[in-house]
Length: 326
Image (tube, rainbow, N blue to C red; front, side, top):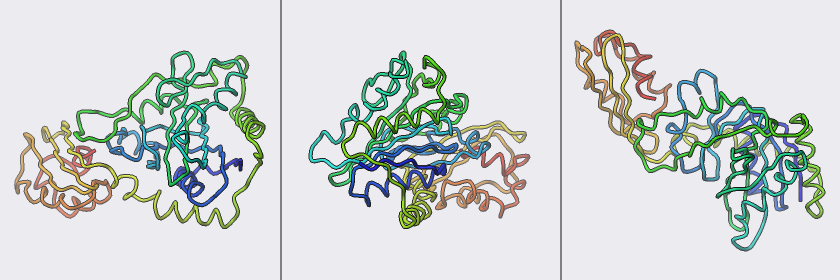
């Protein structure tokens, strides 16, 4: 087994790394890595319905869709992520408990009663410390998880705090659970760096023929290309969302404004605007202009900027119109 310390903290690059290993490296692999602030959404989720859009925008949090299913998770530098890729021949490929066993063993060695519970969670004292997800490609599995070690819990709750009324769709929804940091349950203080080393050393000692591996320059170039052409694109991270209807009402100085959008493949198919605002020119022109473009702020702002908005929405700004669409 190849064991990799992955030093990049770029979320787009790191999620691309998982796919690169799965599809390009024949040997089984184990990798430890960390992301800078990011929300990682499951393959089958409606991205916008999983995030607190205003908070994410204000704090410049990256949004990345991963290959595997399951729910959205918040990553920061206080998290430690682990990935296994393994070749197999049967349903044991998706044995979540097997892949999390080394993690549980290390945490228990440090004095905390970690347990695998339910479908895919690691818990301490009834609180979640990690979720896990998997993706099968041919006869190989990618299993990865995110360990909350010393994460900023306020950011976790705020970034994923969404209004469930705004979206009507059939996408997989994240299920909020009480969470905790591993560091809070250890008998003695341990740094994230030391915890990372202990976990890597445990895997190296546990798996036959396990040894450290570093990506070649050619590997890094291919991962960067996958990052740029797939994982850093709006099409992958938002456009792959299942179809949905969006509804949001806000109060403005010009009155109540309610936005209704029907979105398919990330493109607004229909826009209907209601409210008790005043309009000199009416709003049908605006509704028509909002159709057939991406449900994405930059495109929407560029479209609206072509109109004398004050004539269509008295005392309502472009910023307020944008706010009503997310």
